[in-house]
Image (tube, rainbow, N blue to C red):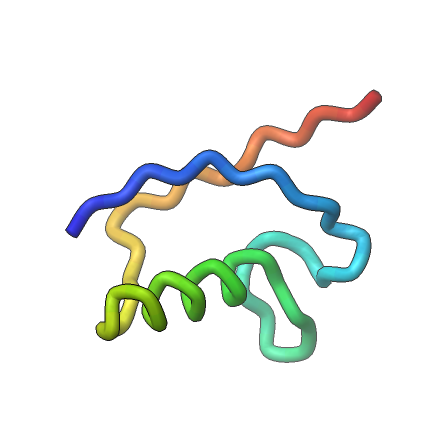
Length: 55
């Protein structure tokens, strides 16, 4: 299964984008959610880091 997601989020409550052992991260939350929906483990073969826009 291949998916393309465009995601917007307020990252103030997270410890960054990429999975870290000591922090809740966006990547971890997304992987868990997709794995729950797909009922199978999720792995990235290609990961494009988000572009950060500041206003």
